[in-house]
Structure formats: structure tokens, C-alpha cells
Image (cartoon, rainbow, N blue to C red; front, side, top):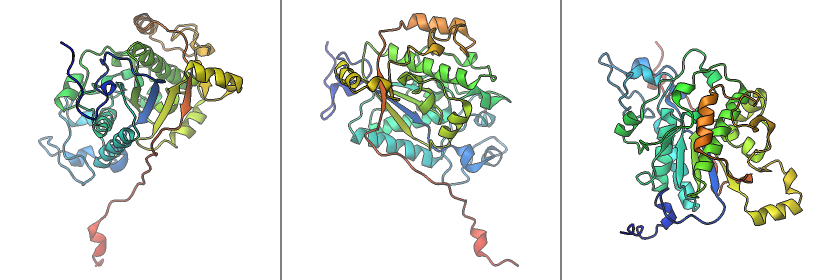
Amino acid sequence: PPPPPPPPGQREDEVSSSTPTRPLGPRQLFIARHGERVDFTFGLWIPYSFDKDRKYQRKDLNMPPSVPDRRDGPEGFTRDCPLTVIGTVQAKMVGEAMKEAGVTIHHVFCSPSLRCVQTCHHILTGMGVADKLKINIEPGLFEWLAWYQDEMPSWMSSEELTSAGYNIEPGYKPYISSEELQDTQETCQQFFIRNFFITQCTLQATEEAGGNVLLIGHAATLDTCSRQLVGKEPRPVNELMSIVRKVPYCSVAMLEEVMEDDETSLMQMGGRSSPTLSRGGRHSPTLSRLGGRSSPGGISSMSLMSRSTIRTPAPPPKVWRIVQPPFPPMTHTSVSTFDWKMLLDKE
């Protein structure tokens, strides 16, 4: 039997990534940073937020009312912290703004970090599609491994995330598994190549179905997942750090596929030299073979890369450009904690 019609006021292509009709118009890619995180807001929060029985106790109104159960207990949050309440509000506001601007998302890929999964959930909640769109957990979207010299995070499993109420796709096979992300000597260029590899894989895997893609990651993700897609080389570390410092919580970058008619007019205007326009970086010498040994700084797990490449054959090159999102940015400020005792006279 044919699928039931969508609810009133909902377009057919909003239902899910399995919608039979391919959405019209140029495809769009949205890349978002997670919301405000507990550890950066409260510092060493775990020792005073769990009692002797390891039960969570909320010590500030901006701390989450509850935290999900995880196999490694409270210590698991040390390198994989949740969002603050403000962080969840930020994400929901972004989702609401996207919906109000008429943005439609068809495919969702998310870093395995809890703060990213929670951000993704609240963005989709704000858009009104959290129960319809499943989240694909992609470890390859995680941030630069060089920042984890002492120890990599132990992420929550898909089962744990599902039990915590997040709409996770259980059958998703990551392009880079969490086991592959152990090289904490990863260079900045390797980081760019890894994130771009994931970007290409997600775009290629969803090419036939069509529709827009949402990637949820970290501050650097907005650049590392877009830079080579518009034909530019990976940035040196000092340039990347300069950008990272200017990407607040829940910032969103947007890219749009250039249709052939647009491409012709851009060519006539000399658009090929445009810094924000290129054929998906396919001509980039660092990606002549995706992740292969011939790529300077290529990902070490060549067998994994070749498996992924086989699973996702490369289509004809696409042209993408960075564009202004159709909704405002998210700005926030940090504050100090109010101490009621300062109102008392000092004795």
C-alpha cells in the first residue's frame, strides 16, 4: 500500500530520508557546532555533581536536570561531557530558526560526542522532526585527535544513546569506526582530510535519494568539512586555530550545490576563481586518492578508507559554494556564578 500522506502543513520531502520522491532544487549542506558544554562552563564538575553512591546531583540551574546512564559511570563524562541547559536551548533555537526559514533536512550525521548528539537531537526537536529523522553516528566527524594526547574519549554506544531517548539509526555503518580513531599524532592536514573524506562520503551516499544534509560536530568542523569541498587546500594549524576561536556554540555554516545553469553563469563571470567555489575539491592534489598512501598526510587506516570508497563510488564532481544561512547566527556570553554570601558583611 502507498505510504500515508504527510500531516497537514507538512511537505512530503520533510517526512524522512526514505521519501520516494527526490527533492527538487540544489542540495544544501549544513554544518553545526554543538551547544554550550558543561565542562567548559563549570570546570571540574564531576567530583561535586555525583554523590558517594555515584548518583547525579544538579548543583546549578544551568546543569542538566539529569545525565544519561553509561557503562563507564560518571568518569565517562570526563572526556565526553553533556550540554548545559543553555546548550540545549541554543540548539532548539537554531532548529526553530531553520524551520522558520523553510530549511528542510533529509539526512543527519553526527559526531559520537554526547554534546553533539544532544545538540543534534535538540536542533531536530526545534525543527519538529526529531521523531522522524534518525541520527547517523559517524566517529569520523570527531574533532582533532591531537587534542587528546592523554586519552581518547569512551563514547556512549548507540544502544545507550537510544535508551537515553535519542533517535539513533541502529543499522548505520560508519565510514571511520571509533576503533580507527586512535592516532593521536594526527596532523592538522590529516584532520582536514579525515573530515573532508566523511563529508564526501555522506554527500555521495545521499546523492541518489537527494535532499539536504546536516552534519553536527565541533568548532573546527565548520571549516574542516567545507574547506576542501570548495576546492581549497587544508589550512595550516595557526589559521585553523584562528577560525576555531571565532566559532561560538551552535554556529552553523551552509553550503549549496551549484546547479548547471548557475555554474555556466558563474563561469562567464569568472566564478571558477571564486574562493568559495569549486568542484568538490576533486582536483585537490591531497585528495587525488581518497585517503590512499599517495595522499600526503593521508589517513593511516588505508584498508578502512578503501572499504568506504568501494561502498560509496565517486559520482561526477559536484560544484559547491559557501553561502549565507537564511537565519541569524547564535551569540552568547559567559558569566560568573552568583555567590549569595557576597551580600553579607565580612566579619
